[in-house]
Image 1 (cartoon, protein in one colour):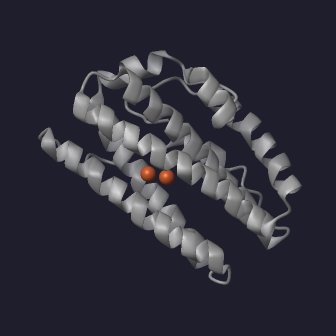
Image 2 (cartoon, protein in one colour; image 1 turned 90 degrees about the horizontal axis):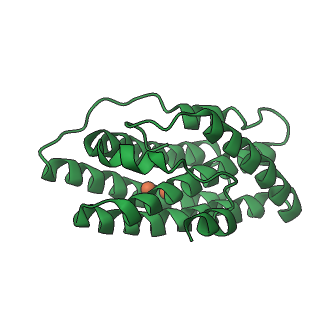
Length: 201
Ligand SMILES: [Fe+2]
Ligand SMILES: [Fe+2]
């Protein structure tokens, strides 16, 4: 079921290494800290899109809602840390996001660049969603199970919204073709990253 969900719904080409969830559970403080920063970065990325494309009304509206939602996720992760007597640790480099972001093409049509940016964000949402599903299904802590379930649902919605939004600004067939390319690229990035005990990705 898990790999069906990964492949058909999220369309991710490579399921997460099953070892990841085991090492993640043993390092839940590190995972929560990294997760908090993922939410912060998701909010920041939404703000950057607003600043970069203020003329795209639909984008500005959708990003405004998204930023609020990602920020509420950030608050919720902080609360989970606090509940366990932990604080927000240092931010770490996010190799996965850095590698993926390299595929946002510079120059050319402004809308093409926007499409790439939206699709990269869509893939980060999809992968996060897949990981939340693994955590929800496998982790022992019942509070965290519920928490990860809710985030999985929310990030799945963001994935769909980002792809839809890209189609507002570029023809649907162009978006689908680029999404297909980026899905391949994303799988290659995941293939080359060792599952780490202190990273969401
Ligand atoms: Fe989020
Ligand atoms: Fe999200």
